[in-house]
Amino acid sequence: MEETHQRKKKKVASFWSWVVASIIFRLILIYFPKNLNLAARPEVSTPLTSLRRLAEGFWLKQSSMSPYAGSMYHGSPLLLSLLGPLTVKRIEGQPNHLFFSLLSVIADVCSAMLIRATGKKLQMAYSYSLKSLGLLTQLGSSEILSSGDIAALVYLWNPFTIVTCVGLSTSPIENLAVILCLFGACSRLVPLAAFGWVISTHLSLYPAILIIPVVFLLGYGPDAPPRKLFMKEKYSKNLDESPSEGLMQPKLPIGFSWRPVIYFVFWALLWSVYVLVLCSISLKQYGGLQEMFTSTYGFILTVEDLSPNIGALWYFFAEVFDFFRNFFLIVFHVNILVMILPLAIRLNHRPCFLAFVYIAISSMLKSYPSVGDSALYLGLLGLFVNQLADMQFSFFLFCGYVGVSLLSPVMHNLWIWRGTGNANFYFATATVYACLQVLLSSHYSFPVVA
Image (cartoon, rainbow, N blue to C red):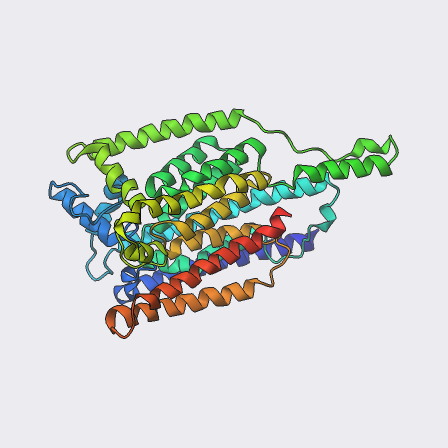
């Protein structure tokens, strides 16, 4: 017993030492000259997440003009009010935007802690399900760290997370809102889940589809084996055991509960009204909510900015004829919606994993993707590390991600600065990046669905 306690203590100490090391590493990178110029990288900053654009919008607002007048800023007016002052505050002798960089570090650490807490909730639910099936002995206890700890460290030490934090992007704030929503749903903290969902949807629109896994999490509870597995186990025990022993049959998972879902709808409406009122007050002199919807959600859906990024839409809509533009806009956006229902039907017993799949799909098909989106779903993938049957494919995917990360800046430099290449060079790396995401989400879905 004492040996087990000592081992657990060492695990906790090891985890926190890695967390502190990740914070120190971020602070060192922040103090590099110009933050390694990561803020100028299209893989890190997009028209929606760039702090430079946010600073432009804040300057326009300070000049008594609409923040959307210059066609540069397309984010939330709430972010403008909260983060805008951080773009002008300076400390002599310190790096520019130091306050925002420190805020990004805090957001990353908070996200990692929420992922860790979510992992503990999922592990408890999964252990309870295995115990009900009499399969608890199959759950290995020899892992160095729990799945929640592994997921938190994967998120903190993921190079994509680090460059997004150091590269003056608002992606850490958006990721924190998404993780807050999932943590609240796993913990049955309905107001917190509704707040995270409303804020994440308000910031980047695409997390709106997470309402389905959130409803499943609140109605069914955290991830569990399929219901048919409980029925099969119950049937086999009825055949093999005597009537007196049949009293120890596996408990069926609890049915869907509508009460927390109704509470979630109520709190989501309440938070939505509150956010819209704040936005309306912030923009009452500059066109109100209509201008906000046109310059934020309309900007996302119409793909107005065709500056290069690691997605596929910028290249496609730069080449397509204007006559077909609206048709293909519908095709690309409906492509995300078409996958929602089949995945929800097949993965209703794995709502947290369903959220991971939705986030991975939206990061592939969204208008303005960045590596911060990949950092989010790769961190969530660590929550299921104990449930994935085959991890041999991971090395291939790791090499693919490393190759794309190294080739993307090279191809961009050859095209934009040296003039020895063309847009196809950079688009090729974006295509490979999208294929890697498809392989990752589809490969790791099979052991969880089965």
